[in-house]
Structure formats: C-alpha cells, structure tokens
Length: 111
Image (tube, rainbow, N blue to C red; front, side):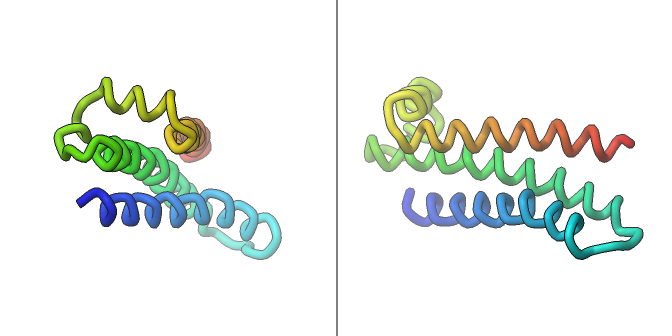
C-alpha cells in the first residue's frame, strides 16, 4: 500500500521542484511577456505541492517502516522517521524548502 503512495509523492515532489527551479530560470533566460501573474500563481501552487508531497511521503514512509497503515497518522512515528533516518532528514528539508519558497512566492504574488 505504501509503495504506490511513495511513488506518487515522489512524482509530485519532482514535478514541483522542476517547476520551482525551472520556471524562474526559463523566465530569466528566455521567456519575455505579460505572463508574470500566471507564473507567480504557478510558483505558489508548485511550492505548496512540494511541501504537501514531502509530508505525504513522510506519512507513507512511516507506514512502510512500521508495516502498519495506522502509523501514517501517528505524529510520534512521523517524528521518529523525520529525526532518526536519512530519508526523514531529506523529507524534512523538502518540507522546509517548500514552505520557504511558498512564503517567497506569496510575497511576490502580492506585488
């Protein structure tokens, strides 16, 4: 059960990361035009998806490590996975990056 959820969460994270880093670079090097508002909205959505995908992956990883689906909803197991494993550190970093980029994107969208 956890494997398809992990795969979907990774796909969401990779897609969101590609948008978050690729769209500004494309804008910087190639795209010129009036699509700034749509670009900002896309960045907000991508940052939200990155953080959400990482949290979903953390829940699925907790369930996979314990072998119990109920572990996906247990914050103590989430904390153990996030602090005691390398996968948890990486997912925590992705959540943090997603939240920071969300705040930056929301600030840019407000202008």
